[in-house]
Each structure stands twice: as structure tokens, then as C-alpha cells.
Image (tube, rainbow, N blue to C red; front, side, top):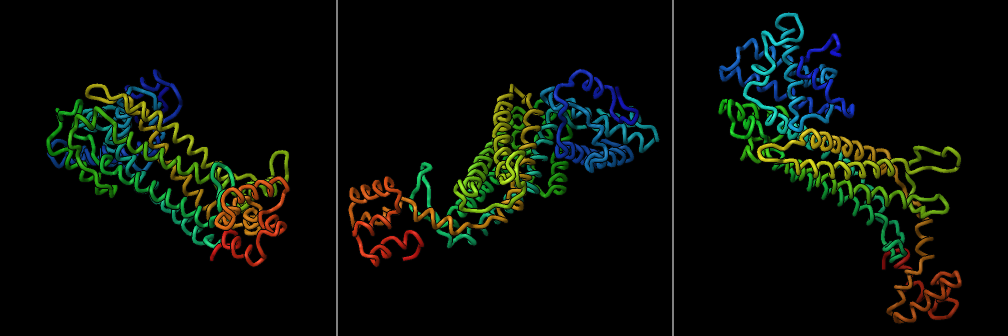
Length: 448
């Protein structure tokens, strides 16, 4: 039933009663974007002489309360609703009208003197407002939250790369020992992955910044003043600091959601990068005695439910799971992008829910990964050097002197006898001690 405090009206209540599917609601960023759109729509309509100034002021004041989150409990609709998001657009119209009526008359709710459709929704349609809100919420979330979080992670990984530049360790390919590298080299690769992820995500601004507002029902702008959309969008750009502009083609902007699919693909790519980085760090820190143990990560959850000596790699596993979730979201968004049928995409709520959730998850994951894991990583230098010395891959340094076949035979014998390459070469008298140092030490310890 409608709570006593409700501002929304019959349209929203019917939607609540008929479509209680998942219990999931649109995220705060989307509701905020709706509020911003409605606020500036009222102001522009007043400037154009289409709304009485007192009506516009009340609507703008109520819409600002939506922006600030003061009326969040009035946005009660399930994400899974009509594919245009009409139910949520009407929810916003009714809440804003109801609160604006209270501002003017002291009586909350209703349709007079301010009507949800005639006044709050003037010059708009759900079909252009909902995709506009999606783009506004997504691009502001990317520019103001996700990209700074990624920059933080990139900086943390880059700083760690410099810190670990002189630490030698064994490289690995195919999960097998390869020739030695510096630990800092690995971390420099991680930092570059994040940097490239930022570039890919930033590039989507060009298409996300195009807004559907002004197309109304089918893209031809029926019932909207020709100056309405450009003026509102200019105010949206000023408010958010994002370069929003009117869509080049309103039929594309409402019939397709390719920009959202493009952004989701870039988010998925970054998730794949995060998975690789977090999984590597988890393996490098495995142990402490029977794993690789080449680095130490902060101890956030010592012990387990049964094994008191264990320290779990909590943050890397958090990041790995976030990556998996975002990859799943991308599949849903891709399917949602296929929902463009004739003049309208009819999977907008699905796309919005998953895309904005991905942005929020990746923002949080990048921040916690940088602050609670990467910053606290330290090398286990003794273990790193020991692993190199024990590795059969150092035989590579002897290939120029012995030839490939003899070096391979030496490696095989060393493995069978449980000896290091240095020990077996010394035992066989293949090289003097000085020659062994000259040939092997640069590979093990670095330098010439």
C-alpha cells in the first residue's frame, strides 16, 4: 500500500503492485540524474515562457531535493519494469509534483496546482529522458569516480614498480620457470594495464556525451520547443562538468544504446586486467612456506575458521570477484543493447542497472586494491633469490658456452639429482668458479 508519507501517485502505485519482480531499485546515481534533468527542464520551460515562474520554481526546488537524495525512499519501483523506463520517469514526475504541491499549498501529493505530466514532464518523454539519465549518470560516474580511482591504482602500482625495480625473481611462462626478471618489471606491466584501461574508458566520452533529450517519443521532437533540449543540456554540462551535447541524430540516440554497450566493453576489458593483476599478486604472495612466497601482502584476515596459521589474500579475491561480476554485467548489457527495436530500445532499465552497478563496483575495487593491498606489498628478497638459484631456467646462461643440447642435458640431470645448475656444473668441472660467477651471476643477481 502507499505509505502515508508518499508523494507519488496512482501510476507509481500501480507499478509497485503489478511488478514486484526483484526488489532491486535504480541506483542513487540514476535517480540523481533524473532529478537534475527535471530541475533544469523546469527552469528552461519557464525561461521559454512555457511554465509559470512560481510553478517552475517549486518544481526545481522539489527536483533539487531528489538530486540531494532527500526523497530517495519515494523511488519505490523495481528495476525490472517496462523496457522504456516509463514507470520510473512517472515515479519521478509524481514525486516532484507531489513535493512541489506541498511547497506551494502545504498539501503533499496530487496533481494540482502542479501536474506530473503537464508541468514536470513538459517537453519530455520517457523515451528521451531515461536514455539521457543513463548517459548523465554513467559519464559523471566514470569521470568523477571511476577514472580517479583507476588513476589511484595506476599510481600505486607504478610506485611499487619503482620500489621493487632492483629485486630479482624468476619469470614464469606456461606456469613454468622462465628466465629471471626484476619484480618491478612485473608491477610496471600491471600499472600499464590500468593506464590503458583508463584510456579505453575515457574514449567512450565522445559517444556518452551525446544526449537523447529533445527527441521526445520517437526521435522527431514532437511537442518539445526547439530550444528546450539545447538549453537544458547546456545546463547539465555546467552542472556536471561533462561535455554533454544534444545527440547528432535523435533516432539513433533512442533506438540504440550502442554507447552504453561500448562503455560496458571497456569496463569489461578493465575487469579482465584487474583479474590478471589481482590473481598474479595472490599467487606471488602464496605460502607462506609452501607457495611462491615472493611477495608479502597486508594481513587483513589472519587465520581461518579451522586453520589458525593461515592468512587469506582477501583483497585480491575481492577484486577477482568484482571482475567476474562486471563481466557478467557486460553480458546482460550486450543483450540489452540488442533490445533496440524500430524507434526505441526496450531494455533500458536492464542496461542502466548493470552499467551503473559496474561503474560503482570497479570504482570501489580499484580504490580498495590500491589502498588496502598494493600500497602494503613488500618483497621477500631471500625467497626470490632462492627461487632463481633453484631454477633450471638459469641453464640458459650456459647455452652460448655449452650449446643447447649439452645445456638441456645438464638441466635434466640437475632436476633428477635435485641439484642446482651451479652445483652440478661445478661438480662436473665444466667451468671454473670464476667462469660460473661470470656466466650465472648476471642472470641470478642482475647486472653485467
